[in-house]
Image 1: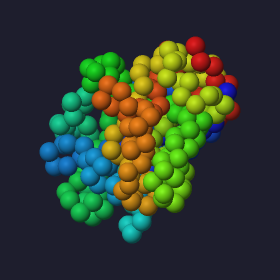
Image 2 (image 1 turned 90 degrees about the horizontal axis):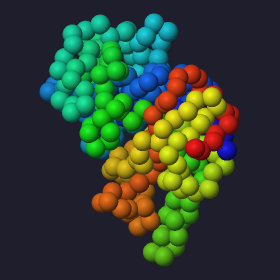
Image 3 (image 1 turned 90 degrees about the vertical axis):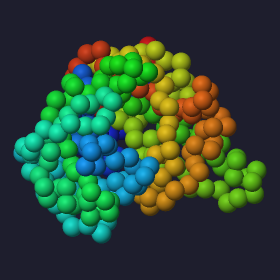
Image 4 (image 1 turned 180 degrees about the vertical axis):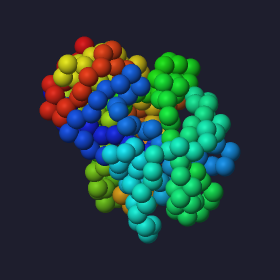
Length: 264
């Protein structure tokens, strides 16, 4: 088994970036989800209500800002965030720093509602809610290509039973993983309690319950019924549907694509 791909998401709910390597910090991968989009009350704008966020590409600049682009929008270079610190309406994060006003205007035009771009200056303040352990906010999300293949097979079988055309396989981006592994048996990760990737050890904190954000196609932003319809049939317990596992690092270092993967 090996680490087949590494992804980070500079802006929460926007497109991810595939990387050949990434530094592991106590709160997750370096540069992962340090930026977010909020409404005037400081509430995070959820992709399930505003799938336009999925069209946003965000590339980090050397000086610590962002370069934004999206379909139908002009490109915007955002300088490092140096604005006021504002309170947030998030249960696991109390405040963040405002980005440049041009970024607020850009996201307001994209979403068609008032929006502001924020930057998390200290990721150590972001912890998970109590039911997820109260530690760092799901530092790394790992999914398996073989588990996705099994899910695609189940979806195709369901389509045949309903006499529908077989659907296109799901884009793994729907699940917003940080680490994608290859070579494991489908859903064997359910039973893991620890893993080692390269030279870094991780504790498996929990399985990942999936929300309605996964039913939006990350490329077209079209809404469908999958994968939740099929997950509800094959992967539902405790009132939730499940896909992937959350990892907490036990030591720090660098992950590289091709690293050997060993479950504990």
